[in-house]
Amino acid sequence: MRLGGDFYARSVHDVARDLIGCVVRHGETAGRVVETESYHMEEPACHAYAGVTERTRTLYGPPGHAYVYFSYGVHALLNAVAEEEGVGAAVLIRALEPVDGLELMRERRGAARDEELCSGPGKLTQALGIGLSLNGTSLVDGPIELLTREPGSREPRVVVGERIGITKAAELPWRFCDADSRHVSRPWPAAMRDRAA
Image (cartoon, rainbow, N blue to C red):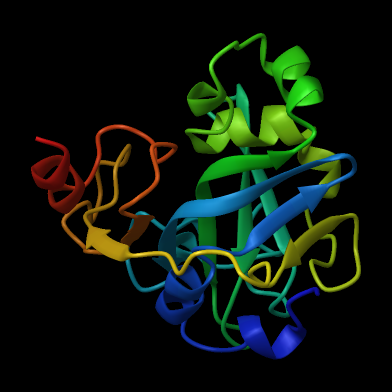
């Protein structure tokens, strides 16, 4: 079942935590969310920090929409817009555990190991065929589906850590990971590294 608009219309940090264990589906491919990061207009790592621009307009729009942008002109990254309209906030989907369409994912990614298919925000969009044309589309009834946890699926054990791959406001503990998944992107949060050692 799809997540409804109300799911996204609340604190971006709650949305980021609660997305762990949900499923992202695009076409024939799907993956279980095992890692997210939250971004808010009040801190400089968020694109919305610069105010409303052509690029950030989607971030300030209604919750429950996809914010897709190019990172370093190479990778499309998928975010879910959260909080109320007029507040720039979104959840970056950082990693998925593939659950459907693995052959197509391997073909798109050129990767053989399942752990490498979606273990990063640029990898997962490539594996799922998500590009810039999907920026601004609805997650409630558009082509990218965000689905509730599958009945009977294991409860994720969520650990929190500092966001990675950024230089500004990197100390904020706004990264959420499923501690029991090997598909989380590296480096793993300290709580996961300690357990794996």
